[in-house]
Image (tube, rainbow, N blue to C red):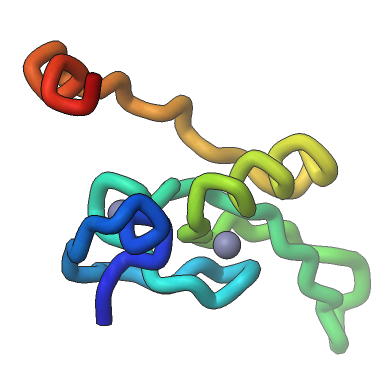
Amino acid sequence: MHCYNCADRGDTVPAVAVCASCGAAVCRSCARIGSQTTRHYRLFVGGNLLTETRTIACPPCADALATHHPGRFRFATVVEQPAEQMLETQ
Ligand SMILES: [Zn+2]
Ligand SMILES: [Zn+2]
């Protein structure tokens, strides 16, 4: 499978993950690695247990999740492209 995000720009890049929100395949550079807080109800002892789990999303879904559910989803800031790559795309 190839990265959906890169395919939109006409590039064929192998995918390494699938967006947890929309299901699009993403390559290593497009994948946004984050975490989400999941609330588990503790059946026998009562109360809630909060855990942090990894979430991988495509760029538009990561932005939407972090914007609309800031208390639940957190994504690392996008790493800037190296200068030589930026020159190639211009
Ligand atoms: Zn990509
Ligand atoms: Zn997505």
